[in-house]
Image (tube, rainbow, N blue to C red; front, side, top):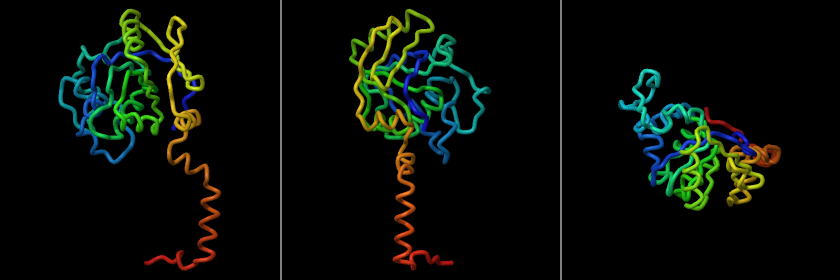
Length: 215
């Protein structure tokens, strides 16, 4: 998992309440047995005018010119600004995968659905909760100034606006530790690889029959 320390990026505004996970990555794309390749289908039903299916070449599809991520001024955005209850709906982990694989590193909103919020941290995506008034101000600035960027300093736990104003946010210490070091659940486990190997060796030494395999 990619570590998150300080990130400065272009902001894209998702000006809708209650964006659910089926909108983030529609159900037909959950058929894949891989963890990769979901970026082109992020917000698929809003982003394209034709119906999408797994395996389609995005270059052959009809883009919706009115959708925010298709507008040239937001090309390359890596910070998503959203409204309340972002990520509601079903608990699919594919939602943070799609956002991450599109290129987003952080999402700022007044509130998130709990399961999506937890899944985001586990997949290297930083969800940041700010007040509704703070989010409203950021929306106004994004709409007013093309190329609007924010800097997110996870170590200091602040969002730094274009005018230099610092907006503090909360993050649990364990989640912060994992993001700063790029540790997902597997990475955390591998920190104890030597102890795991030592335990397995000791277990087989005292119970050698466990090493027998049925052919």
